[in-house]
Image 1 (cartoon, rainbow, N blue to C red):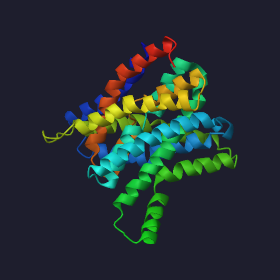
Image 2: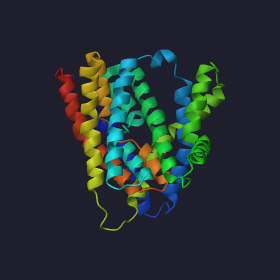
Image 3: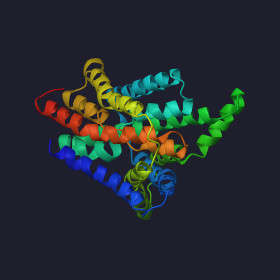
Image 4: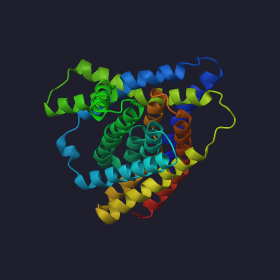
Length: 314
């Protein structure tokens, strides 16, 4: 119980730091965009490369857990994507909304929280969840956004343009390159390891500061918030519920793995969707509010979940 706020409060601290710096004029109006570009082009690719380069096939050999977490994320993603498309949203905007509802913050909150609750046994499941979220789900969202933004209608030309855009996207290239390093059993020099750790370690804090900078910008008073509330409810309630059903009823995982899967699914929305929204210049205010509301709400939902687990619930 006590550990949950201790882990989440630094997240708010980084967001507030960016917010305060922008409101006091210490950082200018382009700071959020420029800092986000640093994350997208340097810090996050280094983190994704590092994760994939150090992942072994033995770590990934948990098909039931992979199926549980992947199907839960995919189900929520497809549901929101279809709902938003039917409501008239552009494919790129609908894709950003979908990933905001299905993207748990496994990297920044998942690892420390699960380590405190479950110990070292949580490292492999959390790594699997992070790969599924940060590499697979992220890549699918990027593909859909790229398809939505292309104006070419001829199928083969559209395909070539999308492939070209993906080949130049560091968030796609970096995990693929890291996986190739792992398959080839290439050992990186110590200096390269240090470089990746330093650069990758900047991804989450810089993204959170960038989010705070974005939230500090003054906006028209009429902006609706019901979209962010809906996405937050899906993230904090629907996704962990679907994950529990898959883990406990469909794949019948051991109790501890069920709890880990549900805990990871119940995490608030990570900063990845905001980075995508801002990078592609879509409606980032919906995503940023979803991140903020889900992080605030998770203080309650995660605490309740921990109480349930400690009373033997699965």
